[in-house]
Length: 376
Image 1 (cartoon, helix red, strand yellow):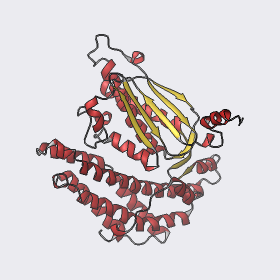
Image 2 (cartoon, one colour):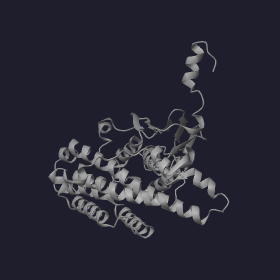
Image 3 (cartoon, one colour):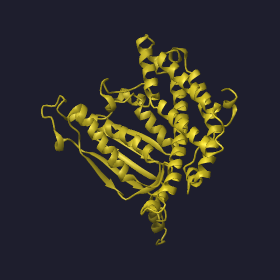
Image 4 (cartoon, one colour):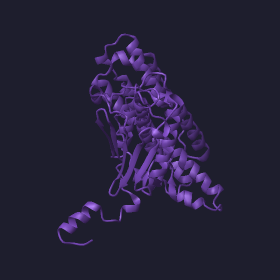
C-alpha cells in the first residue's frame, strides 16, 4: 500500500473521458481494464492512508475500522487479479470491479456511524467537529468520487461496446451512442435532471412530512452541457429536499403558525437555469433561512439540522459537503446564501460551458460592445 501511494494520482477530466471512450469497442475496454488495474491501487491506497491518518478517537470506532478493512480487501483483490489482457480476464476483472462497487455503497453510512460512536463514547463536540477530521474526509471523499467514477466509466464503456455489437442495426441506437460516452452525457439536458431530482425530493418530503411545496422552473429550460447526470442529480436532490423540508416545517401543518399552509398554498421553491461560458442553477426557497449560529457549520461532515429518523430526507449529515465536493470536482462550485427568517438561495456552477450557447455572444459582451459603439 505504501509503495502504491508514492505514485501520482492523475486528475480526471471530462474531455479526456469522452475522448478515450468515444466509439468504444473491445480493444477500448481492454485498455481501460489494464489502466484501472494499475491506477486503482494508487487511488485506493491513498484512501486507506487517509482513513489511517484520522485522529485516534475516530479511527478506533468500529465503523471506521470496518471501512478501512473493506478498502484494504479491495486493494488486495485488484492487485492479485491476473492482468486483463484478453476478453476472459477482462470479464473477470469487470465482475470484480462491480462487486467492489456494490460493497462500497455504504461508505457514507460507515463514516456517519463513526461520528455517532464518538458522541456515544463521550468525545467532546470540538473534537468531533475538528478541522483536521474535516480536511481528511474532504480528501477521502474527493478521492472516492474518482474511484467510483473510473469504475462506473469502465462498466458503462463495456456495456456500450457490447450494445454496439448487439444492436448495431437497431433504429435509434446510433443516437444513444453519440449522446453518451460511458456515464458522461455529452448532451445532458439540465432541466430533465432537475425534474428527476424534484420528483424524488417531493416524494421523500411527502413520505416524511405528508406535504411538499411545488417547484417552479425558470430560465433557459433547453440548456444542455457535457456532464455526468448522476453527479448533477446528487447535488440537486440534496438541495431540493433541504429546501422542501424547511418550507413545510416553517409554513406547513407541523409549524407553529396559526394559519398553516397546505399543498398549493405553500411557498414554491424556484429553480432558475442559465448558462453561457458556464452553466448555472439557482434554487431559492422561503423556508426561513439557516440559523445564524449554524451558517459556519453547514459544510461540516458531522452537522445536520434534521432530527434523526427522517431517512433520506435527512441523510447522514454529509449532504451539503458532498454536494459542494461534486460541484468542485469538475471545477464548478456550490455557494449558499441565507437570509434569516426568509429563505435560502443556493447557487450551483457546473464548471462546463453550455453547449447550445457556446457560439453565442454573451450578454455581458453585447453590453460591452454596445457601450463601445460596436454592434455584434
